[in-house]
Length: 276
Length: 364
Image: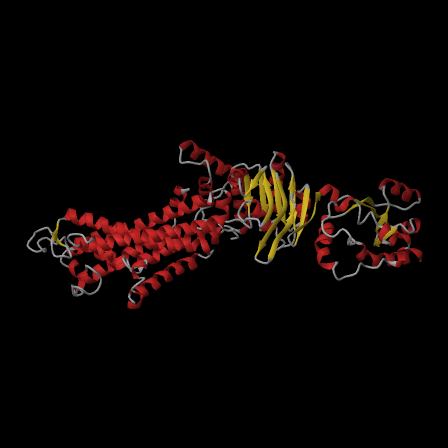
């Protein structure tokens, strides 16, 4: 069943189109930056953008920062929201269940396909933006403070390319986990409603609500428990030494959300009447 | 093959299925009839474990549903509320994915080869053998219906549960599907199909269940339902002579067509011919399934506030309810559920006015 779900994901034009669009935004930004050489002053605009002009190999980090707030969550919410509700609205859900595919099995397969999509999208952004960055801005020899071939971390200490790669992988993994939280919300809503659109928008509404509360001082007490609070903690991978506190908390809170929501999705889906 | 006891399904305050005792035997071609919205689809969903019954028990292929549904469903092929497929994929790919999704179809080579074979065979059976790689969204309604049937036939099921299987097919397609189902049934597949097309069920099925507002109002063999009514249909070029000869036994007359109360057409024929009345055609009248179903499904709503139709005075002695058994209370009605005290609604209501005219004509 997992293989079937992955096949469906791969054979769906939407999958590739959405990944292409997510990769296109950083590419457009890179082209504009390269053409104008006007970078946002350090400390403003998306993270890393000011550093990118000096070294293209840092561009994947900048690209992730660009797509993280809106593009990635939207794409993940659409895929997650479509997972069960989409099958319900095309009517194929009842035929899968009658085939028979166990309800739990179906849900697990959907989850695996969604994880594959999240990882695919994040890795695609990182890889495509690396090539865009290096080809437009160069790999930035002698740009770091007195160290040829090095790349400055956010803390000002130079990183070797191997270190950079490792930290990039860490950041990708962290973002993927954050997106999995989004996916879990969407998947849960997808088992509640028969409308894929409703489930996707519901997940996005939850995220927007969380973003609003994060910025609100009055919500400070609940802030550590909101899903989006630690979304940007992946930036800490590029500090030296790596600043683990927020990363750990972020992973912890996402794990709680994922477990709770998937549990709720399973409990709901396994006992529900399929009337679609 | 399918046995339910007291099956009830409520959605909030609406009762979709009410206390249904269904019995489908092995080898049956069971026609499940009822108007739209009468609970047919909900009951089918209960049988397949898609919807959980509020109360009552279900047994399919001898195992309780939904408890053992996973061991039952591999032997069941189903078409529920219209076919469905992924619109951007071809019919063939859809079937392969569906086949791969089920149990016992791992990624091993032998299996995969089997799968290709199974899919092609199922497509061939429903008349889609030469289908190309067009996506399903380009299919006509009839093609989708055939694809849905192919999906139901994929694993050579012992029991086919089909919800309106000929929806969207043209007359030729309907005929083909009927042939296919008969063939499958003769090879040992039990068929349970729901429909609101009486003619279709009459042509295909051996056993009939009628559902009305969630209640099973009738369940019987088609043979019994279509038992002779005790009347004979005669077609003669000189109806007046026949009426004169059989005074009092002619129930209705339309042109040269006479309906005569008589048990044996052969004897009646001899009588007519002996009296010099030419006979063009003669035969036993059987109740049509449509009559049976219309009576049953309208009875529950009508008999509450409408008094029973007064017997026609022109008919003389045989017109009263006690003397009309061949029509209403004969073997035809089978196990009628519902209020046994209520008088059965019969076809006499409509025939009453007509017969008055005939008798006048006969007397004149």
